[in-house]
Image (cartoon, rainbow, N blue to C red; front, side, top):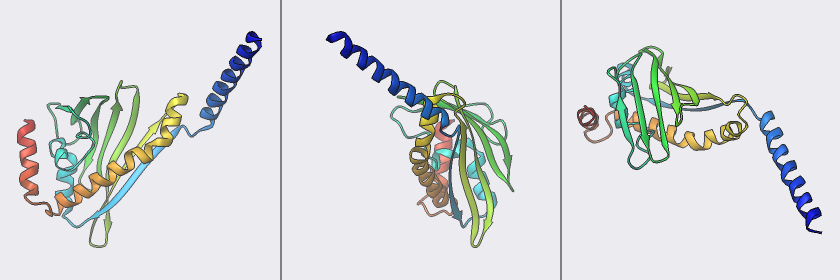
Length: 193
């Protein structure tokens, strides 16, 4: 009596596992998160804030999200080749700026946690009535990893609000609508150095 029940449980678990794997294999391999804001500030000011990793702490929430988050920057912190790594409780990774163009924007490669999950991200500029459109996006490739494909479904709800928050802060800092925004950005640079 016990053996047939265990056999049925085993078959059920095996069938459920197979179903999870098969569904995972038909899920999209690539995922993208994108958010946009219009900033009423000179393009040079926006680019200054986006291309310099030392100024990111004044506007991006990505590296201040966890307790004990430590950020280390490479010798180059501005423009193509700029690099930084971060780690804290349950979070970590690194990014390297691959392109920095005042007319186009900033592109960077990101590696998360164990460096096996990689993504390409950018802050691109465009023209808009009354300012500059800044589009922040990130695209990843889950490859054949079934669990990463499931995780890809969660990327927009996980990263989207952080992108919105970061772009909102970027807008406030670039438009000098935060009290002492430039001083706060300079203080962040001074404390990191």
